[in-house]
Structures are given as C-alpha cells and as structure tokens.
Length: 294
Figure 1 (tube, rainbow, N blue to C red):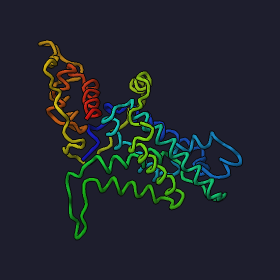
Figure 2: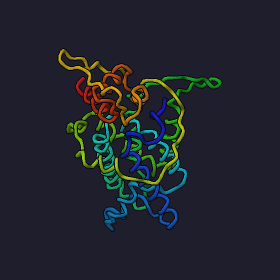
Figure 3: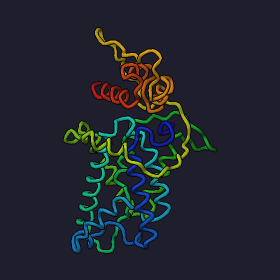
Figure 4: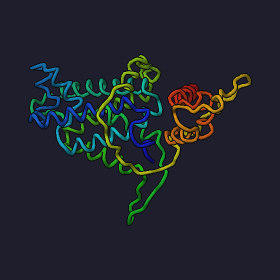
C-alpha cells in the first residue's frame, strides 16, 4: 500500500498545500511565534484576531507535529489522484471550513479562556482518514509476537500520534476533522459533485515550487479503488495515437502502470489511455467520470 508513484505527479494542489504549510511552520518557529499560534476563545470571541486564526490553520506549532503532519499530507495525495485536482480542492476547502467552524463552536461552548487548540491543518489531515479507512483496503498483514498489524497500521499510528500530541488541545481539532470528512462522505449539500474552476487547478499545476525530495513509503501493488467498468460502446472506438508519434506522457505501459498505482483497474486504465491518446491527465478524468456514474 502506498500513495502511488513517488513525488507529486497528478497532485499539484497537495504539493502547494504541503509546501505552504511547511514554509509557514518553519517561519513561525524561526520568528518565535509558534507558541502563540492556535485557536482560543479569547482570540476569536474577545480580541477577534482573524488573521491569527487563518495562520493557525496552516502552521504547525512544534517539530514533531510538523513531521507527522507533513508525512500524512504527502501520503494522502493519493486522494487527489483518485478524484482529480478540481474536486480535491473542494475537499480541502470543505474540510478546513467545517473543521474550523466546529472548533469555534466547541470553544464557544466551553468558554475556557486557558484552552488554546493546536495549530496546523488538522481538519484536512483527519478528514482524509475517513476515505482512508473506507476506501483503501488492507493488502498485507504481519504478526509481531501476538499482535497483528497491517500495511495501514503505520498511517494510523502517525495519525494517533498527531491526535494525542497535546491531549485536549489536539483531540478537539482532530475530531472536528473527522466530522468534516464524514459530512463530505455523506455528500452533504451534494458537495462531492462540486468542483473548483479549471483555471484554479491549472494555476497549481503550473506553479513552480522549490524541488522537494520524495518521501519513501511502504511499497505495495494492491488496487485501492476496485475494478473500473470497461469503456466499451457499439459506436465508440479507441482513438489510437498516429503510428510513429511518441506521446509526451511517455510509453503506454508506463502510463498504465501509473494509473494502476493510483488504484484503477489495469484493463480500464489501458482503454482510457487509448481514448485519451496516452494523455495521463485526460485518461484519469475519463476513469473518474466513469467511476462517478457507477
């Protein structure tokens, strides 16, 4: 089990979010402001420091939280590859907004002036655990002494470490994130059909960030999305590339392998690539549209 091919191929929004979160977290630490971050009753209801609340959504306040948070954000790029950048951008906005409102509601109910919630993108991270639990199957199991683990265990352990890092200060944002992910899963207000304009995702695709080393993850070849239907039609025929013309997306088999690693069925991925003239992005959209109409 992994997040697909290493790096940020077909996951430009995740890359931008991860880099932004990392930069803001490091700058906050260098400037000595990290311990001032976090949502609190006093800042929101008395001082109304909205700029501080916004910064707290993206910046982690400690190095361990930054390490585990960045790792989980990197792994969960698999969901952007599955549903596409346009829908994943909506998922990010929805998760952050619902989680933020949930935290504000809890602070308003508790009215504890001494409570300051942990800063960082807890909403996005823990909302991602909902599709991680429901959609990604276990491919391998291992037994250590009398304990049984799966290839998903390390992701759960990293999330548990982040959730319990500061007890109540971190548990509340984590629970609000799980709530946001559950509401998205339930398709509240048909949110799962919403997409941001294509120009926005194109902006992230063309955005150039400093080079980031790939984070190595446990390898697996298990299909994480199940079989996709064939794109057969009495009138539709595969649109093969002209003979002798090489696609800019690389060889057909390499493209098929990339889509399979993202969770698509081998035969469906190959057929979609033939229709898309070996354009991986277009083939991904074809597969996702077919999945949405199942």
